[in-house]
Image 1 (cartoon, one colour):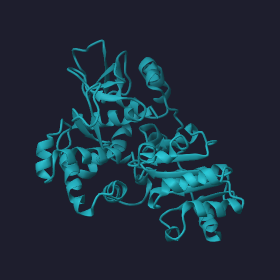
Image 2 (image 1 turned 90 degrees about the vertical axis):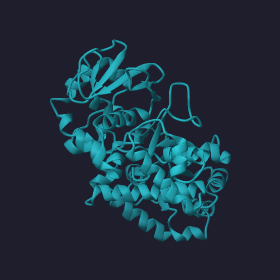
Image 3 (image 1 turned 120 degrees about the vertical axis):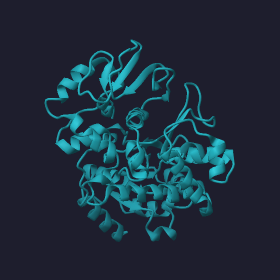
Length: 392
């Protein structure tokens, strides 16, 4: 136990968080069992350590961070360790990469039943379906998603500002006033392209090649988050990788499932399952017509965020595809994004029609909202595209 406390103190002391994530204030920390899900690379470990630093400081032994990568947990279950921690005066156990422990969900259930005075906060992959696949935790765990940086968070980090986020309705109704409060302090257009290229994942802050780091992270998503959690045999990894590559190099469009099945030598049903796994891993987003959902074939498959587009196939990117990917990624957190009908790119929340464009649309429809890339401020139903990066 002492070794874990020493590691905890070192990690907390050396945790530097340049941008405080908005999720920190959205979570009800009074709950006894809290799950933080998120794709690999978005900063879940840092988030746990930030919580420990803010709430308990470095030396408070009531809080302890542990990582299931530690070989110690090959011989001891979570529940047994949690009991020892509580007996030593522990109140809050932070468990990183909980899915690395066999029977982790039943172990967490034991902790909940045996140690009512203990709070557990754990991180897991976005591929995990806490409620559907772990019925023993139903009604007990409160699950939250940690996303990559929004454009707002990236801008705050790069410029030293502290701009707040805005709800979609606020942006639609009051975008001209909001933009007037931002432009005197910073020019978003000077930063938007850098965000599109490398701003979503926090590891752009590290002094390493971003694209190589992202490619390595993407491979880990496939090899660990999909294969391990979904219990897929290693021999099928090459098929999933090829499927992702084929989706990335083609323009966002309705997938030809039969063609994809032939290309990776598998069945149509397996392709659809693989597409769902890739979406759960936050590598792609499947965009459906309003009222439709998986397991139906999507109207369009897009990369989850623009950074992925540049990492996989930077030589043949269309500007319109990049702009639409930025928009759907920004809206995806709290809104329903559906495929648009004639004259619009997306339908949001089943009612709002958006058209994403770089250039001015001469014949505008009063019922459509135009998200424009090449303007710093908008007017009426024309809104600068960058402002949708302030939704979280």
